[in-house]
Image (cartoon, rainbow, N blue to C red; front, side, top):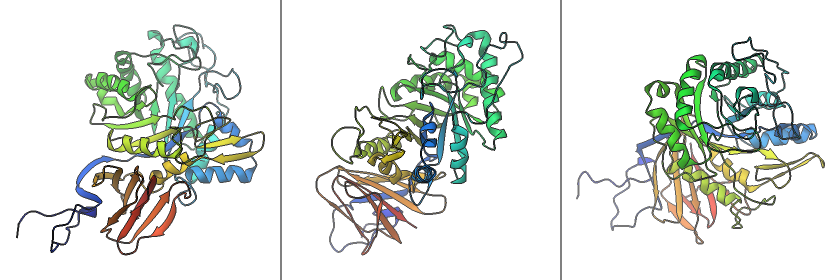
Length: 443
């Protein structure tokens, strides 16, 4: 008998010694190898999308909020990303209201803040999210007010004028204080969105070095929030911003979370930091409203499940924040909000995200997991309450039988016909259906 050699199966339990050697288990989880702590999963409803929700009847509003935040009826999302306004003008569902739309008379003049208590209905949704138990509120600015920038416009890129840096930092902190008065604590604060992309809507450029320099201005002023940077347009592009901050000891002191989007490039590796990182914005390209699970379009539910898996396992991200929770028309949001028909529609993208977000809770830790079949993409987590979550995406066309599931377990299946449909695990066996996402929860 070989000593010191122990097969590890689900949850790090020693496997019984077989009379004859058997093949490897379908899924192996080793809790001794721990990866990142999870902060949560979330959405944004910036750029006035909440006004679409408010246009629905009260019962429909509640159903949508349940789908976003309820842990039994919906996704149980735990992060809400808010847009810090830049301009009070523009077409509907374009710009957000600013707390200081007009130049107060220069960077050293006393600020003239305004607050309507509504913030394009973001306050209302934040309060509703809080009632569901959401505690992470991530406020992010797409641009400084135009008068603070070299192009005089909140849109079309431009850069922050050096003499306005401290005033812009104070402006951001003032926003968090207005939310505090409404009973909402902004836990995470970002000063730039896609600083490497010039957009026709609210946008502002920072080089990695400029971002690191501004962090040193904002950090000492925003002591009561976790400072976030830099929401680059792509994940590979975000690495330069993270590297610039990590190379500067003072900037590194203040930035608690490094963020990136995945429009220009997908998550393929961790960002170069020991701090936490978030995939803080993405939705796929597409030209129609799509409710399909697996149609090869690239913006079906299956595509979202793959993207979340890769972000968690390749990028070691601590949070995944989707763009958007709901919008109108040919949107790739999780929901389509039809303010004309007073109705909403649900995509499989919601259920793909929910297969992770409902069960993997803030404070969970990802642990090592692998699958014998390369067609099965698996990740595993241990929640703070001791429950375990194993999420398996079978990308193949044949079922995979997973034997040896220990403990009181329930499997939740999401595919063409199911939306987190629960089934008890009997005989310690789970069948991973082809082209399906299976979440196994062991309590």
